[in-house]
Length: 352
Ligand SMILES: NC(=O)c1ccc[n+]([C@@H]2O[C@H](COP(=O)([O-])OP(=O)(O)OC[C@H]3O[C@@H](n4cnc5c(N)ncnc54)[C@H](O)[C@@H]3O)[C@@H](O)[C@H]2O)c1
Image 1 (tube, helix red, strand yellow):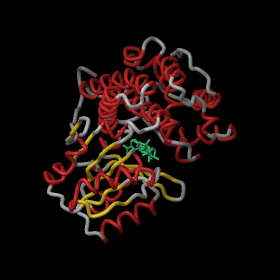
Image 2 (cartoon, protein in one colour; image 1 turned 180 degrees about the horizontal axis):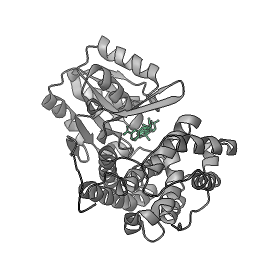
Image 3 (cartoon, helix red, strand yellow; image 1 turned 60 degrees about the horizontal axis):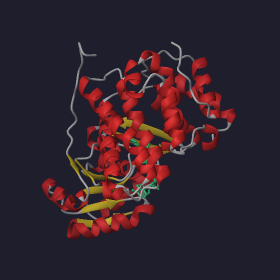
């Protein structure tokens, strides 16, 4: 990788720091936005209203109806609300679901999105959009979907419940792990992946022990920023493919699926990806599984609701469309991997 690479930096403006959401108005002024629609999930409506109040007349309204995986009908209603209010931009306050809704509006109405992330999912750093129609999720990349500015305020993350913080943190770690062996990794993305993962590996146990510890929250959010940037800049491999299938076909929860699957894929890919041992030690899959165990995260696909009768379907869908991976994968390999993840076994060091 050090001999030859292509690196393209995405345009990215980040305002980071405890209390940074108070500077959101100045960010909107910088972009010339005067009537924004503030988006959130129903659960984060109070926060969205507080943010809208702080924006004064720059806020045209609050739309608190974001849902996981951006159903097309939710996107259509949100676009109509933005048009009715004459909004000239959106402020997405929340996790990947809310930022995903902002992207869906941006795609069709070209309204700029300013993201205020409150989880570690990383969507705010990517031009990747996703829409779900009749249970099938379509995704794609479009520069229009990339937020124009991102305001990271760790104070907004102290209320993120510990179980969600941990699984969301694993979601971010997954971007770094797959970024390290991505076919289009560059020295820059690898630096960001290592730095981001190390920040999260250090911060997550502190967050789990003391969720209101602002220093730990800042470090975790800093790590999530970098891991999200890696997701936006590289091509993801087997892990993201499997999680996409599990989320799409079986409606399993996004961050939890990442948490359960990541140790197994890391163990499988480790022989072909020495960078994983540099980051996580000689047994990368085992190290990730042990961390999930220590932090009380789910470890089996069975407990997330995957029936054992569904394993064949998961494997079939995953092998049906080609994807990048540092180590070739057969249907038998995948069946073993998904079965082990289904049972919640601790992966051991894999043999090449
Ligand atoms: N396009 C991309 O690049 C990308 C990247 C990662 C994830 N995603 C997508 O994002 C979605 C998952 O995002 P997510 O894991 O952030 O979950 P989420 O946005 O659905 O949030 C999970 C829950 O936590 C609540 N919440 C969020 N922040 C909170 C806070 N600080 N305090 C209290 N509650 C809070 C939300 O209201 C929600 O109920 C999936 O649809 C996934 O596909 C997209």
